[in-house]
Length: 339
Ligand SMILES: Cc1cc2nc3c(=O)[nH]c(=O)nc-3n(C[C@H](O)[C@H](O)[C@H](O)COP(=O)(O)OP(=O)(O)OC[C@H]3O[C@@H](n4cnc5c(N)ncnc54)[C@H](O)[C@@H]3O)c2cc1C
Ligand code: SF4
Image (tube, rainbow, N blue to C red; front, side, top):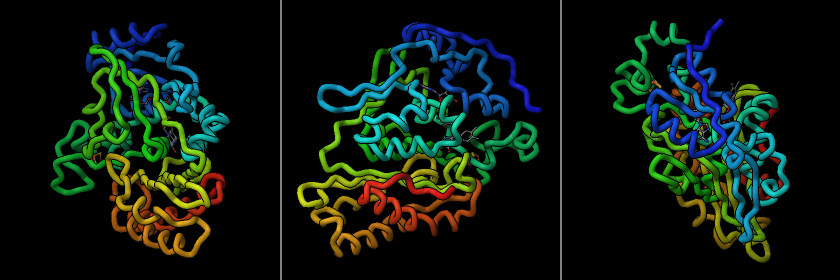
């Protein structure tokens, strides 16, 4: 049985208290939300904080609100299960509701939060292992070692962003708010991740307080597609978030496609909006454009041998999931996945 290393736990009631605890203890402290990722990672000794600061008791981090301008404000401590069922999210941000509904399994979605999902550590089959296993291999660049086992001679970590909410939030143009010792900071979600998968480079004691999604237009359509081994629980082998904004007569005015589980950050496929813009979604030209978009996705998304699942198979599934997810968005259907 894997045991947790020893640590102290703090349960502050206010954001200010949590921020000062994290500032005071620096790298020796970490925030915990639902704990569904941090706790296994601590058991694997990927993180060994001396102090764990629970965000559960901070009221202002909980809940979903709709602002007067129609934008959605999603508290970082909102459980994924709540996000997946909320009528306002289902209507205004269907790709996000669908992505949340496909994270892990039901128990983990009740414990796991939006904030923990956004701030999820990147994953790799050479890293998400026990200490004994990693030690036998000589560790790796991301933790305790000097070499990458995915890219021989690689100078940066290419572990995969594996958080289902991330591409959905990117496709929706979300902005994230953080509170830290120097005050609050707003970050467009596209700027959150770097191309290096070493987690601690991007956190530095700040707490994600909420995500804001701009109000969708009346013709907003979105969907999420997820490939995974076991439809009931697994992390994505590939996650595809799509957005279509339609004007009058169902003509595309804007579109987006963001893919996750490839590399250290979610990847936006280029030239998607240009390819679809001006086309009516029921017409033959849209179907031809969809073929083109699938080819663009296949060229721009190159899965690496970083997570389980054959990377050539994952690559072959990129156009398949791109097509299915765009068609689901057109039909305002549910999420694309197998069970
Ligand atoms: C069997 C299994 C299957 C899983 N499958 C999936 C899956 O399919 N898709 C998926 O996306 N995830 C999956 N997960 C991972 C995890 O359950 C979810 O990502 C969940 O949303 C994490 O949220 P949490 O609140 O539990 O985060 P925690 O574990 O509490 O925290 C995760 C990380 O985020 C940091 N953090 C948390 N909240 C904040 C905040 N507000 N500000 C700053 N930092 C913060 C923590 O310090 C920690 O580093 C799976 C986990 C397990 C065990
Ligand atoms: S991508 Fe390389 S450095 Fe990163 S976790 Fe995997 S083996 Fe380690």
